[in-house]
Image (cartoon, rainbow, N blue to C red):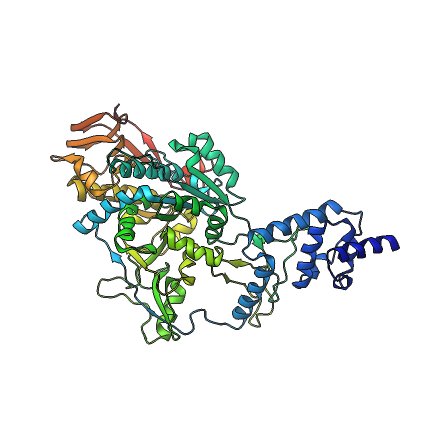
Length: 616
C-alpha cells in the first residue's frame, strides 16, 4: 500500500499537482495509479470545477479499469470540442442557470424596432435584377447544410436528407440541394468570359445520429454528380448534461463511467467551420459568401439567387432570409434591439418573447399586424447569408462560440431541482448577437409560397394544427413544391394553369395543383424560365409535367394528362401541341398502414402511374 501511495505522490509532484486536492475524493485518489498524466490533469480540472460527484461510485483499482479510462476519453472529447473547454462550459452554465432561476429576461434594457431590409415581389424588375446579380455571385459562394437530425419527428426512421422532397420525380432533399448548387455553379460560370472552373463547396454538418448514413447516401449515389472533393462533412459532438443549478455534470443512467450528453444545437456549425480551417481556404480562393441552410425545405433554392443578389448589392455582412409573418404566428421575428446603453443588434426574437417584449416597451397591443395585414417583424426561416471576410474576423475573436441559453424543466416553482437533466444550447441564427454596431445586418423577405415549406411534423401532429396554420408536414411540403412551380409558370411564362382543388390526406386539407416539377438546371431564375416558354400554353389541374434537361422549350403546349421530357445536356428540345392521356393519379393511403413504405405513408398518398407520354 505504501508503495502505491508513494508512486501516486511522485506522479502528482511531477505534474505539479497538490495531492491534497484528491484526498477529498477517495475513490478517485485510489485510482490515480492507473491513469496517465493527461488523464490526471483532466481529473484535476473536474475536481476544481466542483465535479467530484462523478467519481463517487468508482470501483477499487483493478476493477473496471478499462471503463475508467473510457470515462477520461469521453471527458477529453467533451473538453476539446467546446470553445474554452469544460471549465468554460461549466462556468457559463452556472451563470445561465442562475439567471434562469432568478427569472431574468435576456432582453431587459432593450427596446425593439423594425430593422432595415429588402421586401421582394416575385417577378418584378427589382426581383429580376437581384436574381441576375445573385447568379453572378454564386461562383464566389460556399454552402453549409445543417443536418444533424433524424426524421423520427416526421414518422420516418432514416436521415431527413434521404427523404424524397416530392414523389413525382422521387428526388431526395440532398439530391435536390446538390442539383441546385451544381445548376448555380454552371449558370454562374457561364457568365465569365471564356468560362470558369469554380466548384462551389458544400459542407454538411452531421451528428453521431446522421454522420455514417449521410456518407452512405452520398457514396451510394456518386455524390449526386458533385465531385467528392467538393463535399466536406463536419461532425458535431454532443455536450455534457447538467443535473442541478450548480451545473453538476449528469452521470449517464446506463453507466457510472459515462457523462450523460445531449445535442448542443445547430449553433455549433460556426465553431466547427472555424476549427476546420475551411474558412481561410475559401477566403484565399477568393470566395466572398457563406450560405447556411437547413435540411428539409424543398423551396429554398428558388429564393437563393435573389437573396444572394441582395447581400451583394447592399453589402450586408449578415442577410437573414425571411417570409411575411402574421402577428403571434409561431415563427421568430427578425428584430432590431437597442439597449439603454447604446448597444444595438439585429437578431431573431422567438415569437413567445416578441409579444411581451413589445408590450413592456410602450406597445400596449404587443405583436400586431400593420396595414399590410402582416406583422412588421418578418418571419425568420433560419437561412443565413454571411459575408466571408467579416465572418472570419468575428470568429477569430469568439473562436466560433455562439451566445448560449439554457431551458431547464423545473420540478416546481421553487426552481431548485429539475425534472430531468438539461444542457446548454445554441442556435445558428444567434451569430449576430456578438457583432459590433458597425456590422451591416439586414434581411430579405420573399413570399412564403416561393421560399418556405419545411417538413418537420408527423401526420398525427400535423392533423392537429389549427385550420389556416401551416402543417409543415411531408404532405404540405410536397404540395407546396407543386404550387410554387405552377405559380412560377403562370407568372413567368404566362401559362394557363387550372386552379387547384382541395383534398384531404392524413387529416390535412391541402391545395392540389398540377404536379409540375423540373430539374434545377432547367429553370433557376424568373428570366430563364420566361425565355423557355412561348405561345399559348395550358396545363389542366389533373396533369403532371416532368422536365429533366436544360434546353427544353415549351411552345403552344396543351397538357391534360402526364408528360415526361428527358433530354441530354446539349440537346435543344421543343415541346408543343396537344398531349392528352389518362395520366398519373394520386391515391390515398393511411399513415397507419404499415404495409406501405414510411416515406409514402407519411404523405397520405401514392402516385399511380396509369398512362404518360415520355419523350427522350
